[in-house]
Length: 210
Image: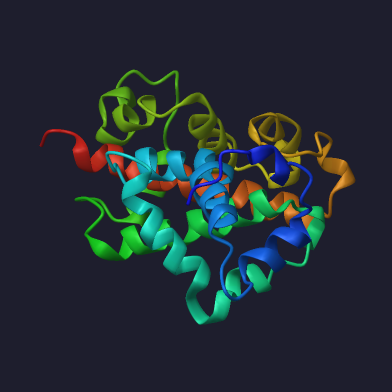
């Protein structure tokens, strides 16, 4: 039976979520709220942008299996590390899981990753000839966030800390000042943004007509 009084879950802490989700027997209304509502935002992004799925529901089963695998290992590993919320922690873990799975599932495109990065290194917005390359045309189709992280880290060769002020504006975090967070969390977050952007760039190259 699905619970419609979702306000009863509003004040549950992250640690309580973990405890309740791994409880036996499972609390059905709470599971429904967690998987269908609380996690909806980042699952929608993964479904649409990474997996090109028709709807979030199409990946809910695999998301449940991912979390519950090995006696809920992913959830049990959450220790509020680096002050990350449970939602942030799960979105990173889930994105990594689906990215890795899709990367293994099929050839990326006619160019390998090294060639793509080399071409990105050579891109210049002032060079009209380079704008005709497959990589540049795919790059131009990315959203602003993905373009920025590739522009700063690969094309300009800057470090994560040098671009943190700019890139943190794209991060959904309760802590708006990245300087208040452990540097490793900031580096890991921006590294994941880079990996996601590279993946989407490769997908854009693959989808271009030959």
